[in-house]
Image (cartoon, rainbow, N blue to C red):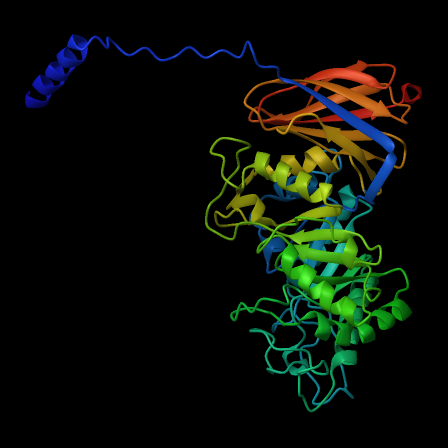
Length: 478
């Protein structure tokens, strides 16, 4: 009652002063134009797309085992079918811990013997099974086999977890040089997969060599030490498998990777790997890596939130792990000449944004992050080349990709809360049929219209806080 009297008195005072009741101002967009011009020039060309992906490491590939056989198959299809999630990269962990390593017993010296055996428990922690099933929906699967650590007996610490260096590199100070043994170990993993009908496309010796997690598999290296190993590893790989690509070096962030590449380059090591690989945890890519490379493509091979939240939405809260944000992360990477982008896990059980699919007993959910991947990779297929694009407004983002068959994908992101009308102008192309695919809170890469155009120009709309991919084809295709 006392508070009510005070408020009444205050209202009377305001009225007595002549201020009157408060009326909010009326806002109008009548003076604003939500028009954007997008230019695409097929004569200016940049990096070649490798694709999008995820990993089944550390048992993640087994997490769908509680689902029915039909749902297990549906999850794999949702991730890897080029007409759904359209992922094409699968990153395997080359295990070094007991039960996961291909070398259960370590010899006393590098002279051997080395009794390699395939990790039979759950088919290499279900990674072989996942690769086999993914191949059913993507015959051109790009399998990246990557080691977090060498076997403990190859390292300065004698342990596979908790850091340490490979013996034989500078500052290792070991009795024996185990570099050649480690190279053979990695090559043997590829051979064991090949014997089971699975082609490995990319082979890596390092994972986050700038970070010691203490509790799990890890091995440290700077760029100078990487040179010491890669100078032995690279020619051995090419002798064993001439077409197998070698990666370097999966640092925790783009800045950390730049430091490593700079050191590697100082020793003349720019040509000792085929694919530049980095993660997006400690720092994202601010500029292309090109000045530190000898023409190799760049892949972002791991990123996620390792926390215990699960975000399945496109754009509701604005947090970092909604699908809309991931569409922009990938856009920024592609504009900096990154050729592919991988999430951390494909699936996991407990609530975590570390996975694209959350499995809960006999049911599962798919995060909208996957639809951000699909907005790019369903239409810009591996082998597509990025074309020059620009946008006349800050809040409309665009890239364009020309596939090997001449079709063009133009993923556009509208960061505004208003619909934009797009004037899309194309140079040096022959396409004249466009199909639009919309992703927002209500659509998951859903076809949203088809039309023809001529003169290399068309007009279309893009909804607020949405990604819309325009897939362009020649009329002769119909």
